[in-house]
Amino acid sequence: MPGVYKVLYGQARKPHKETHHYVKPLEDAVLQGQAVYRELERLKKEGFIPDVVYGHSGWGAPLFIKDIFPNVRLLCYFEWFYRSNGSDVGFDPDEPVTIDDRLRIRMKNAPILSDLYSCDAGLCPTKWQTSQFPFEFSSKLTVLHDGIDTSYFSPRPDENPVWPEIGLDLTGVKDIVSYVSRGLEPYRGFPQFMEAASIVLKRRKNCHVVVVGEDRVAYGKRLPDGKTYKQAMLEKFEFDLTRLHFTGRLPYDQYRRVLRNSSVHVYLTRPFVLSWSMLEALSAGCLLVASDTQPVREVLENRQNGLLVNFFNPQEIADRIEEGLDNPSEMKIIRDNARQTILERYDLAGLLPRHLAWIRS
Image (cartoon, helix red, strand yellow):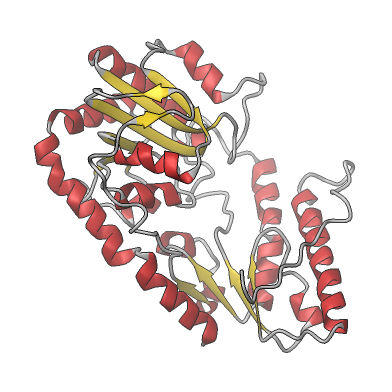
């Protein structure tokens, strides 16, 4: 980009294998912060003194900014503060929280707490995510979402449901149920979705299900037997595999084509960071069947701009999917309201100027 000077930093090493597992994330953050410091030290010797440094908290990059530039304004983007109760951890009753979990989670906040102390101001994307941070730092935090490009993620009913890049052609298919997640994992309700999809596919012989995402765990724990959750769910439930399509990770234009052709889009999440894909789906005019959890409730009102369901109830998820498929004309107002929600509250065109004004202030 014209006028933008890019500098890449590299960690000197990874955390030692012998490091206590509570402390490994902190050691990794320190190593990243140290690498950033060294690059900034070199730039400082060349005469570069910034007015503002804006860092993404949690992984270590902003840790030592105030040590190299004591007088600079340090801004931090804060996504999540880890808690051992009241949010994602302990949400699933089948995953009891051990004392080991509690101690590990407390230590995971160490680099974030250092950034909260050092920064002059911080930004969080949603009210729900902001509510996770300690109250004593609330005066430093502003709630402001990054924004969704509503001109790009727009409804397009005439877009053909064909993905030649991956050999998928759903031309003539009336009912397309979509699901999107970076990783196919319990944090985003993948097991519950797959059970619901199995029910819907058995009931509706002309329905197809499209699953977008990598067959890995981005958040949470892996299965102890080494299987992926995709493998486990395909073994556990019956599917007509000619109507269940795993696309893997898709480029933006192909992913947008999935949203634009979706009859019902399913988004499930534990009480955790809200996925940008949910907001992009709303912007594209999708009919959302979504979990009745705190991050979702900040955006959706049941039967106004989406259909809320119990995260743990695959039968209810399947029933709401079918309700959406059976009543397209009645659901049009919900789709329209979904798009309007993003236009009014999450449109990049309105939020980016506010974001820049916050930085300048």
